[in-house]
Amino acid sequence: MSDYSNKPGRLRPAPENFLSAQQIQQVQAGRRDFLRRAFASASAAMVAGGAVNAYADEATAQDEKIILNKPDWGTTLGRPVDEPPYGMPSKYEANLVRRISPGLAAVKQANVAFAPLQGMFGIVTPSGLHFNRSHQGWYEIDPSQHRLMIMGEPGLVAHPKVYSVGDIMRMQPVSRFHFIECGANSAMEWANVAVPTVQYTHGMVSCSEYTGVPLLHLLQDCGANLKGVRFILAEGADGSHETRTIPMSLVLSGEVLVAYGQNGEMLRPENGYPLRLVVPGVEGVSNIKYLRRIKLGTEPFGAKDEVLGYVDLMPDGKLRQYTSLMECKSVITSPSGGQVLLDKGLYNVTGLAWSGRGRIKRVDVSFDGGVNWHRARIEGPVQNKALTRFNIPWVWNGRSAFLQSRAVDETGYVQPTYEQLRKVRGTRSVYHNNAIQTWQVEETGDVRNVQLAHS
Image 1 (tube, rainbow, N blue to C red):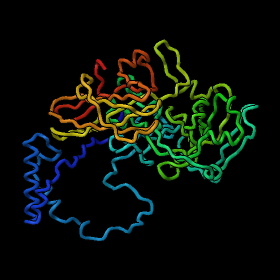
Image 2 (cartoon, rainbow, N blue to C red):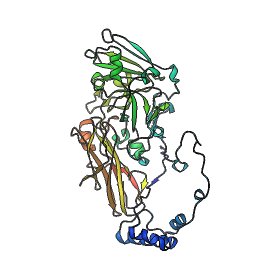
Image 3 (tube, rainbow, N blue to C red):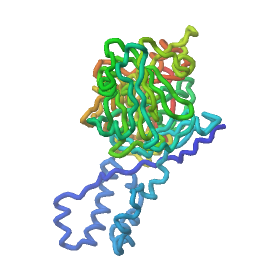
């Protein structure tokens, strides 16, 4: 049996109790006594009003102790500002890490490290938490020894060139936010295998600000025959020499980047340092890491991972090839599987939505398994082909509930239910699962992964 080592994530309580202006004016009358009365009255008011926060049913003694007695860090000198020279997360956040899936691959170098979506905020994935899918492990590549070659079939490139990393970094850069999602994200859900947490159901997606040079500019620099090129082949420098065919139409849009920067710094080694291709909106395997070669052509190149792997098995037994677009998708990240609601009352339901077709237009949330839908608040600005954060308040009454989210993108595409998706794709697929995810909140407060019969 697989051992998914995620610890249940207790939901962090939000600061739902703020002092009123009248209460603040009473501070001068005696701060210590006032704070005791404030804690007691706030807890009593919350219980009476039904909007109970995560700690409202517990004695306030611990809260009083924390606020009234100065801790060590309030009476001593802290550490020097340059220690450590590269900042690290707090030790109290040590449980928020990427995790591999037990049994997914026999060789660790060919495994997946899933991003902990349940503990992240906003839309940007910290570089150190970006999901990692490697076909033969990651490498520390010396940037001074790395080169990118651009070549092509006869008549397609007037001046084939070899670029150093420094050559590319001297060109005019652009910075854009984009998601990268593995084509196999949510793969186990096809067969109704209920892995426990959102980290394992949807954790093969991440979003970063990428900095680099549009590939189109490099092709123009090489004198490419842009009207004659229909496809490009991108190849990585890793041991597997991952290669993918990419339609020239995507390159001509100007969106495809030869990137060296991620979230304000150089790419991390496991994310493709020193150069990677960023192809917004398509499956992650096309975003070639350790990019070393671009070849221009007139036909698809038939690489192994686009004719044998990363293909969709259809109900009639045929394989759907060259399927790269990542369709509109969303997921509630909190509350989500493995977490626990500590008490009845108000919660913020939050999640992420994205689409390879463009921007997210709307996200609806259901608390009864899709019977009724409520419009969520989208946190802007909404970026093109990037993760989009949504939030909606919800008062849990202590009874069983089924939480779902449904995204709509700017093209009008609506995220499907499993029933709708399986009518077209069957049940034997691995890739491109963008169906609506359901989390059941049990009466105990425990949240688990389920699929409803009608979904």
